[in-house]
Image (tube, rainbow, N blue to C red; front, side):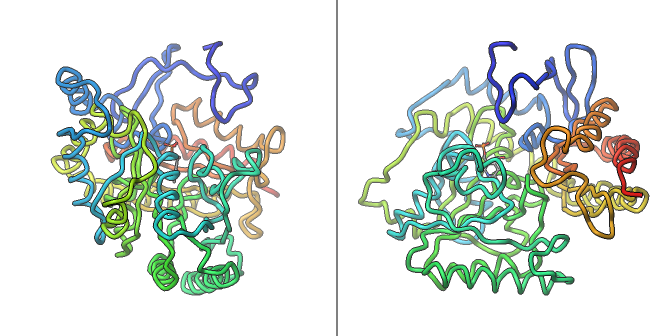
Length: 435
Ligand code: PLP
C-alpha cells in the first residue's frame, strides 16, 4: 500500500481501506466491514462484484487465447463489435476499441478532426471526459484546472441545469430553449467552419446526474448537422444500462456521429473502451490510414467479458429491472427522503443513477459546501460521507452531491436497505442547515 501512488489524491491525506472481496452489490474490507456499493466503484461495476458469468468468460478465454494483436481479427472482438452496433442508434456501424474511456475520447476527437479537417472542439461546463491530454482539456470541472494549459483547442458552453439555471429559467421548456439558443450563438461566434466536433455526456454523470430536458439533444443534433460538426455522445458513464437504456441517448431518439463507451461494457473486469462510429466517418478511412492504435485495444479477455455482459443483460432482463426498480423503488424512495430532509435541495436522475443535491438553505439553494471546496470548507460533506461509510453504504460523492449508482443487479430489497441507511446519513447533512 505504501508504494502505490493513488489517483486524484493528496497522498499523505489518503487512508484507503483494503478491499478483500465482493459479491453482487456488496464488498468487504480486511477489518470485516461490509459495504453496500452504491457507487458501482467508479460507476463501472454494472453487473456487480464477482459475477459468475463474467468470471467464467475470462477463465474460458484465458484458456483459449489470452492475448492477441489488435490488427488481426478475433472471434470475441468481432462478436462484441456486432453486439454493440446492433444496440447503437442511427447508422453507427463500426467500433474502434480502446482500453478505457479517456482513450475513447482521445480517438473520438481525432476522428472528428480527421473527418472535418477542422480543429476546434465544443465541450460543456460541468462535464468530465477523462484524465488524459485531450480528454482532461475537454473536461469542464475543477479536475482540469491544474492540468491547464491543455493541448486541445476547446470552447465551452453551458448545458441545461434547471436547478441552477445559467439563464434564470423556471421551466424545463424555457431552460431547453435558452440552452439551445446559447449554444447556437457560441457556434456562430466561434465560426462553425472551424469547429470539428461537439462532445456531450448524454446524461451528465459525475457533474450532477443532469438529465437533459426533452428536445435538448435533438436540438444539439440539429445544430451539429446544420454546421457539419461531428456530434460525439460521451456514454462512458451512462452507456450499458445505467439509465435503463443500452445508451443514454437512445431515450431521446437521437443518433450522434460517434459514441464513446467504456465502464459498463464489461463492468471493468478487464479494461475496455471504444468509439462506435457512423459508416460515413468509417468510410473516410477505407483507403487512407487511420492514424492511431493501442497495443491492448480490444483485448480478447476484455471482449469475452463484454460478450458475456450483453448476454447476461438479455437473459436477466437487466434493462427492465433498472427501469422498474429505478423508478418505483430508488427514485420514489429518494423523493420521500427529499420530503423528510430539508438539506436535500433536489433529487434528480433516472434508472439506477440519481443525484441528491445537498444545500444549506433550500430557498437560496446555497450548496452544502462551496464549489470546488477543499479542506475545512469541505468538512460538512466529508462528515456526511464518513457517516455513510460508517453505516455501511459506499456512496459516489461529487461536490455537494451524494450520487446513487448501485450495480444494476442490486435487488429492490437491497435498494431499500441503502435508502434506510441514507435516511440516517441525511440527518448529518441536516445538522449543517442554516437556521
Ligand atoms: N467520459 C466520462 C463521461 C466519464 O465519466 C469518464 C470517467 O469517469 C471518462 C470519460 C473517462 O473514462 P476512464 O476513466 O475509463 O478513462
